[in-house]
Figure: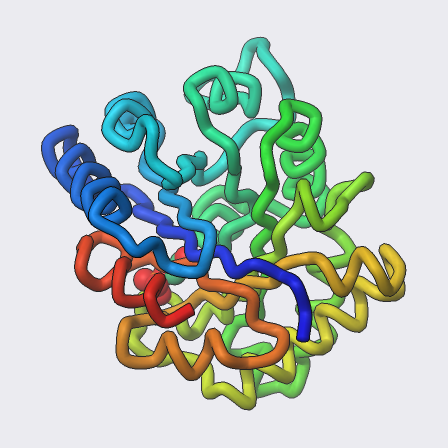
Length: 252
Ligand code: PGA
């Protein structure tokens, strides 16, 4: 079997005030301290406003912290944006780029996602590059083509298994409670890996982690995480509760 270590990543989205975020982070750090640690890497991506208290709350634990987005430039006249260097400076190790909510809410296209991912890599962060089809695209039979084209358009130059993670998130499964079936997830993950072979070569493709995201919960995580090409999860709703996030991590 592959040597890919699974990654369980929480995407808190625009949720939580300081007290909530600190309690959630401390709760997870306490679980890790109590041991035994789950057999996976653990990451939380709070809103930008909570990165500092969360980094402080998890200091000394194996829980990594990441941003939910980043700008493609290091600094400059970009009101409201946050650069990857700023994230790294606060102690972040990862940045999510190209989440479907960014693509929808901010009209982000593949070229921008790629530029952001490359900026993240340049700042020493690990980029989590999100792709996924809408329900209309799935119903039209375009699932594999849409994911291939988003992957090719969004993957940073210089991507390696160490600096890049791909997240497959079918848009119709995000926040809907409608999770992909194991067969649907495995089909797309295998197609993504096949495309990675073409782009990066067999060894890099075999080492790169591909996460599933979209209504992953404690009761469906085990089945999804057991699939041959599913190397972890990007978890929204269920990452906001210590018990649920921990249960998913323990499914690895
Ligand atoms: P969800 O979100 O787990 O709430 O469906 C996943 C995501 O958007 O990353």
